[in-house]
Amino acid sequence: MFPRFSKVAEEDVEAIYEAYPRKVGRGAALLSIRKACVEHGAEMIMEKVKLYAKAREGEEKFFTPHAQTWMNQQRYLDDPEEWAVKKPEEEIRDNKFNI
Image 1: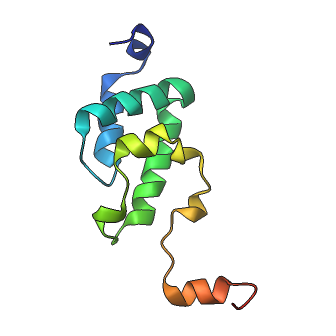
Image 2: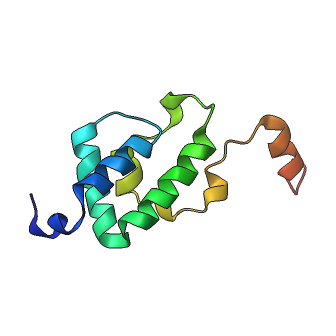
């Protein structure tokens, strides 16, 4: 394990993993979560994961990226409005150009 990763509480890393909406690739996910916590703080990462999990409620898990992917691509820095899955009628209503 890298020395800098020891600054993050293991309980925080585990809690973030448990809050993430898809549970696959646990070992790789925990490393990526730990790295994200070192860079941005465990509180911020947990807050974003909770928002993302809420946005994914009721959606097929198949379309939810693995936690490792989500963390490595720093998707927690994305606009949370982009996480919500829009229904076709919402896309039409939101389309400014009516294409």
